[in-house]
Length: 237
Ligand code: F3S
Image (cartoon, rainbow, N blue to C red; front, side):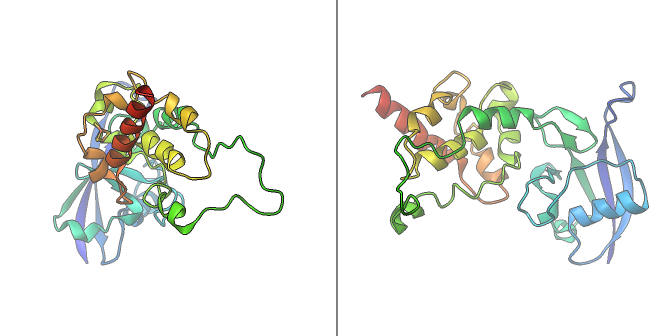
């Protein structure tokens, strides 16, 4: 058990005069407690006005992504005592408009996602007696791509996104490549269309922050590089 101080960003859109400020809460933390557990304890027992997003508490829904001691991560997968210090700073993810306290608007994330048509596109009629099949080797090609939970950590950590809020973002590129690499998909041109744009893949300067930020250990930079090669191949005919 250890007494930890949580410095948490507060922001109430109804109190513009006060703007953003940090508020401190102390909590006895025991081994095994996640940051989400700690935030729940604070909200339920100390300050019911503290606002944050959460849902599954199992690293699946991506709702509780936030900036913890300067690094994006999921609160439900972050062990408080593993930081080792006595103070933890918790802020909303950078780059997105803050709605309240730790809650950000994910509208930019959703815009980028929808632009790449994140679903299987097929122009052939489905087989009448079975589903669309893949070989094990074809299926393996989407490993490391389909696992994205759309938490927004990658795009929030990207300096290109900070500089250009219309940049489509590494999350959208990873999602597009998940379908371009899928042997059953026949819509590569449609997935790629929004990426071949001044706010598309060419905004990526291979900074790699997105790889470090991904709580699922995925590699959006590799997906971007594969998609850039595909765009060049198509331009060269
Ligand atoms: Fe941004 Fe990742 Fe590219 S951090 S610049 S999308 S490699």
